[in-house]
Length: 267
Image (cartoon, one colour):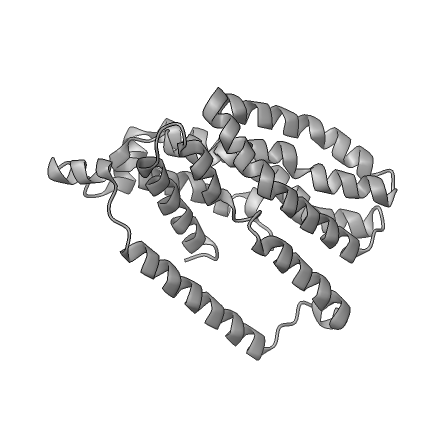
């Protein structure tokens, strides 16, 4: 299993359950909460920890050295998170739609193969829609450090602080995007977000290239606002592309398809 695959699996489960259990007018807003992987309250804490680490142990951070004790501590925390996730999963009943499928004896024996055979177009379109969101996200989250330190010569801690503020802003913009999607439709919201993200790219690098810290800060903080217009309704948008009995497998394939693409090769 590749790193991140378990996260994708949990995300697919969350999307499927929320989509099936929430009222129609709330499903997109609530499904957007499953997308809080980047904008959760832990994001500012995580970035703040990295910022503190660069000050306390700059040489170790620069060389990316992690001692065995640190690895053991990370594994211990991962084990706790997995145990909590398992406890929650065991306490969640099947969705009404899936219970009907079981009662009617219509459960697919090999759903992965079936969804590839029956809904290949939905898989491809969902993966491409996700790519439109993923590509700029990695520019804003990862590429900014290389560009910011090597091209416009800004301090790494300044960039980290700006990203912390961007994460705080996303705590509001992601659920707001989901809420607006309940009103105007997820496809329309996604298209608006994709167009604004493309246009903002010109303003983003224009502000960065000024070299003025205040303008760079504004560019980084606002970078995720148009992106979040796609990120908020994305979960419900992908889930609705697949029939209930193939939804979980379809979402998993569509979401994980980018794990081996150039967009997601971060190391």
